[in-house]
Image 1 (cartoon, rainbow, N blue to C red):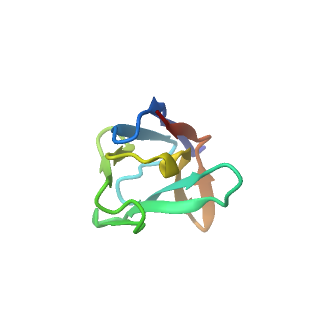
Image 2 (image 1 turned 120 degrees about the horizontal axis):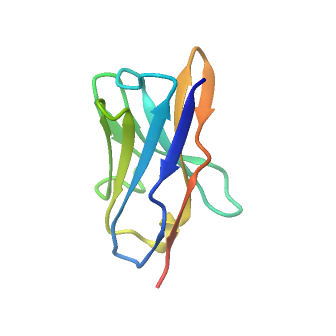
Image 3 (image 1 turned 135 degrees about the vertical axis):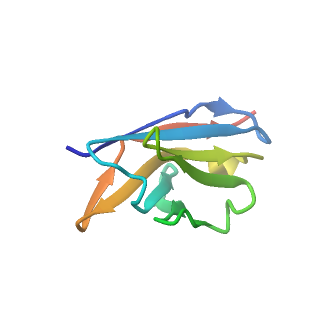
Length: 115
């Protein structure tokens, strides 16, 4: 059974940094495309960043230069390093992968950027 579990969300001041983790179980994710999404209150879930099989990364323009997606194959863990956080980054952050056309999501972790 594939499971994804995010952690690392917290309350942080504007300009601060945070690293989110997503531990996978039931599947080896090192060769899978993996994604981070976020959903702010009252808004649709939006794509944040991706890492594909060869570890090429992509990120949304709103976070480019501030957020970095990476993974540790040995730990079967996906990361999202976030710097220079802004209030508009406040959201629940989810990790995601697609296996055999099926979407798998974690339960999410709350990031709140506020002074």
